[in-house]
Length: 227
Image 1 (cartoon, rainbow, N blue to C red):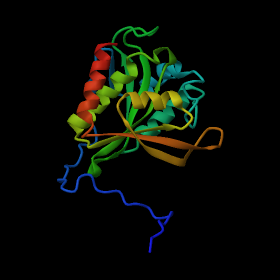
Image 2: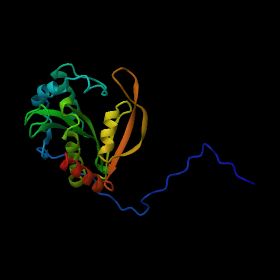
Image 3: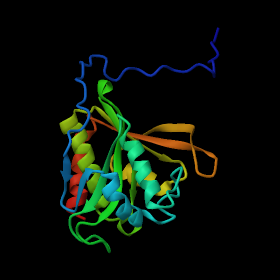
Image 4: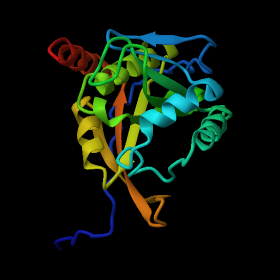
């Protein structure tokens, strides 16, 4: 008698690493004074009191905050936001500064902010997020170089085995930018976060693992060399 497939039965996913070995815990928190320096930018730990006014001016554009849940209306609100995020033990917020003129920004200017978040030392994983740049540097070398610096530090210094990135389902530009890094689409987290307009967003989830990292690093390095 022929069996009829159960349409509601989930086919279990096989373990791709059945003979895996234990992975050491990830280094965390990041040592005070750490800087990540590239050819065009450098990342330093954000100083909410010192950086907020210049950062607010750089990010004071509707397009910057379009897919984020809240937009600061003055530097003091941005400072409070940065202090709140910096106070969380699983976050590390970086100020992004130019090291040479980029677009219309002079050397030394603050051009954005990016972060590690949801750091899980025991599980050797973290997320890169809360990344916003001033619009004049969109499409320039800033984002790929920042991601190369952050990924390199996460995998090769902190000892991460997984880095994830996620973005709003409506933010097509961000999804394409993440995919160009070499990150793999993992799925959609449905109705995950509340937007500023009260709707609940779906988040598109990507990841890069230590297994992917050599190829991703090579792609990003080549991309920056030819930029």
